[in-house]
Image (cartoon, rainbow over all chains, first blue to last red; front, side):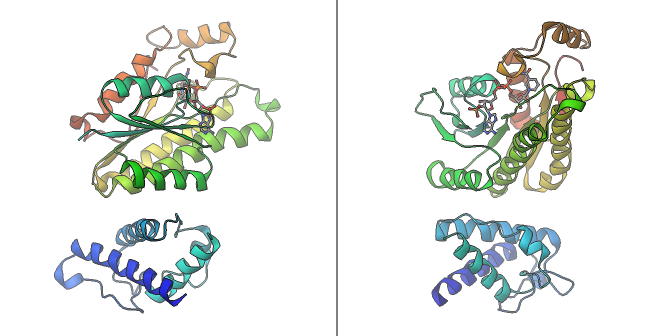
Length: 101
Length: 231
Ligand SMILES: NC(=O)c1ccc[n+]([C@@H]2O[C@H](COP(=O)([O-])OP(=O)(O)OC[C@H]3O[C@@H](n4cnc5c(N)ncnc54)[C@H](OP(=O)(O)O)[C@@H]3O)[C@@H](O)[C@H]2O)c1
């Protein structure tokens, strides 16, 4: 259980690394549990968020051998967006993977 | 390296022709349709699925990534038609046509673009129809589903440009396949009279436009719907 969550978190961090490659030094996204991925406080612009999500989906696909759609209806309609920070995205993806069992 | 083309709706008609045409040219082809394909070629892989089944489509891309590697070009050809008066068209016809023509096209576009964006190169070709600009009576649902495809082509071309992906559409005139077999001859003749060039379309008319859109030099052409026959 915890192991899965750590794996997911690493995948998110990997995706942040990929985005950071394209960003200038002073705009690098910090890899932490409470980095905000969405909203006015987020360092990501909307396109970077799109790239991040696609890259996470892709890495989940290869790591877990499962295809999930992170930007699903639930995520978009949830009052507390799963993209509000890294830790909520981890638990959201974890749920999606469990549903996909 | 040889480019990989994904073509939907390859069991017959235009899709089947395009498979054979591009296999001949040395491309690797991945195809799909609800039924099996009789095409046997070491460079051809077939998937049986309904293009509107999101889960199956995602599984297909998962397998492509693992076993074939990538998709360079998507030819979003799978489509169905139906002729009926607006007052007599059942809801199930709407659902079927929109599922295949709009949802299927969209799902393949979305999943293919995710693969293409990593290489910053991709070509997506959707299928429209002259029934939309000609506003053909009896084709309200078919024509409107393809109008949606045209819109998807236009909007996604803007969103995907920064990833080096172009999105265009071909709008064929009638071409003799199963798709138009049930259309009465007088209707067909009248339709052809409305084209600038008055003849049936041929498979090579379609591959000619695809050839043009996928060539390297066409990287500045996107968001366009190219109609055949001068419509
Ligand atoms: N022929 C024309 O006059 C004409 C004119 C304008 C535009 N177009 C467009 O050109 C495209 C190809 O048409 P065509 O004339 O070649 O038609 P066709 O001969 O009827 O072939 C259609 C192909 O699509 C597949 N297909 C249909 N629904 C599908 C689904 N839900 N999931 C997966 N595969 C599906 C069919 O295979 P299965 O049945 O095995 O699934 C078949 O291989 C279509 O988009 C059509 O709208 C054709």
